[in-house]
Length: 66
Image (tube, rainbow, N blue to C red; front, side, top):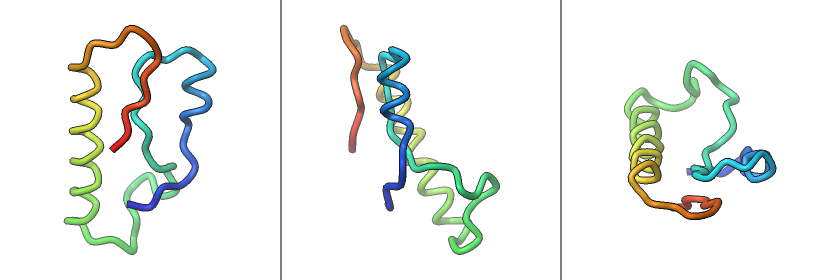
């Protein structure tokens, strides 16, 4: 996965307690250069990371990395 600019610094500044980094959204309807299966795999990976973050007890700001 290519990591572009993320909003992690903004999330840290506003005090979010669970932060899941993701790539920017250059193609809101999907990257035309990627197949539908690739897009689904990327979205599935992000969803799994987000669900794991929600299930994790945190006491302070936490950035969930791969």
